[in-house]
Length: 320
Image 1: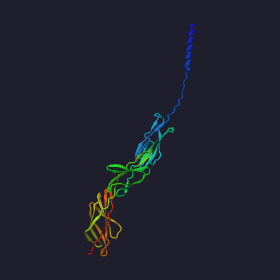
Image 2 (image 1 turned 90 degrees about the horizontal axis):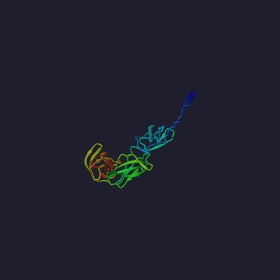
Image 3 (image 1 turned 90 degrees about the vertical axis):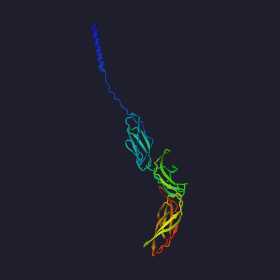
Image 4 (image 1 turned 180 degrees about the vertical axis):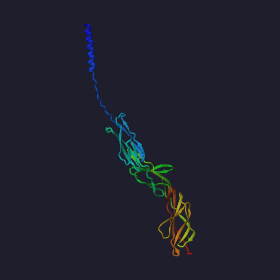
């Protein structure tokens, strides 16, 4: 009886184990993967470029494990600067102003970031000395669209000093030394959030105040050549020295004529000039010729001083 009981128990145990094995079930779990969205984009806040220059925005996308880090870039003003799909920004030439570069996440998160790009022309226009006085020089320059103002500087004792700061495109510098030589330069600037961003300096330009007048002291004939239709006179003209003068220009107005012509230049205080007087019939005009001397300063260019008073000279002639 006991033998059958053990066999029955063993059978029941094996049967139970089979039920357990057969009843084990496999479950296929469908796990949904949620993409990680972009939460922020970091760009330089402000960047200044000179026309023709380029730079990479170097956008930093967070979080590090964002599923899609791709960005789309746009420029608010492609006349100022352009941006390619990689974030390389290029400034256009001969323009000034501020453009906004925007980077937008492509994952639909709506995350954006901006960089202000300040574009300045490669060279501000050069100031030109126009009206020149004994103690003053007036300078002018052309306005450039997009600039908020200008700084005009003058070289004095080896140091550049700002002599004008504002929006105008001309300035009259007064209180200068008579016969003084000066250099000037200019740069424009753009103001963004109260900060100035300067364009490169212009080329340097020259200026000199006007020298006072000389005085012609004598005019003497050194030679005369009688031709068929004219008489050629060689005259030696002398004048007084003007301190600071690099040289002098001799001017002449022919008898009865309105125009004034240049006869030549001299470093010293005398020069032999040649004048042609046309014949009328058998003689020449009885009206005198008129001579002037003007001092000048050579400083980059020639800056004329005050013209002397007229000196009359009556041409003497006897038909041969």
